[in-house]
Amino acid sequence: MDDVRITRVEWGRLTGRRPRSAGSNARLGDHGVSVTVPIARLTAQDGFTGFGVSHGPAHVLDTLLGARLGDLFAPGLGVADAWLGCDYPIWDLAARRAGVPVYALAAANGGQIPTEPFRARCYDTSLYFDDLHLPDDRAAAALLAAEAREGYERGHRSFKIKVGRGARHMPTEEGMRRDIAVVRAVREAVGSEAVLMLDANDGYTLNHTKRVLAETADCEIFWMEEPFREDPVLYHDLRTWLEREGLPVLIADGEGEPSSSLLDWARAGLVDVVQYDIFAHGFSRWIQTGRLLDGWGVRTAPHHYGGHWGNYAACHLAGAIERFAYAEWDEAATPGLDTSAYTVRDGWVEVPDAPGFGLELDEQIFRHAVEDGGYSRTA
Image (cartoon, rainbow, N blue to C red; front, top):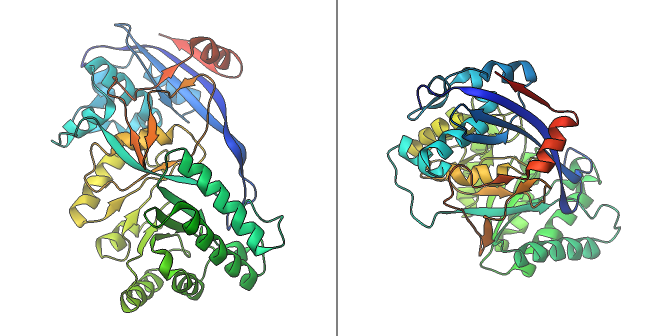
């Protein structure tokens, strides 16, 4: 691995579709039906290739040409900082050359041995505000319940429900009332054994959070994600209230633009689940962060919504992080990206033991993407 060099870099943008259009959340409007998957493929001088999501600009990717893989990637550390914009293609290439799946290579870095067959827990992340056009709470709740049931039929047993309609899209009281109705309807639709999480995207106040959690206490919410903008005083108040009320709800945060103090708050016990974005934070950094969180007894659940590739990348992190909680699953199909080796069954993603990330590219479709707005460079 030390001496082999990168001789070709290709980049193209693939576009996929969700089964249905995703609506609003507490902050943003409709998320739509499309997903964008920017792919970089690296070819080494020995003929091995590796590919993965890369948002790195052309001038950064060009610096890979002629670089030694041993300078880009260290088995005990991951990808060097200068090339983190190409984190995923480099991991894929290193694992393919080693003849092992990425989860095994990542686990070996930390001295862990993943169980086989390998799998990771996942949750359906598709329950957005698809109901804002409906004036009646019962109809809105029924719509979201039907969507949750669709996820259940696709193999999911854990579901994240967007809440916070009253932050922007509805009057505050009406929005909270509908949030509560939706949560209760989803619980009924998926059964008592399913796991439910709530995500307010900072759309609640502390008092709104308490109100909704109190009125859905019998729904057994697993975590409350981004209830309000990060604030250690409010976190402490919420933690104290949850303990007093006997509600075993975890506090999750870190998805968007998290405070630089988030890890300190996690270590102090104010945050139970850290959710840094899997693309912005990167695979290599996530391994390092996850091991810190393991030592503090804090759970890991990387965010990635909208990128499709993150469904699969997150699963491989579970090989290296002991307290990995969930992979976020944004159901989509992207022409050119073969994901058929992965299966969601009974709330788990069954991860292939093929080398690399276990994904394959359709050469014709990727070649078209490279030629139509992408680029290719050869050393």
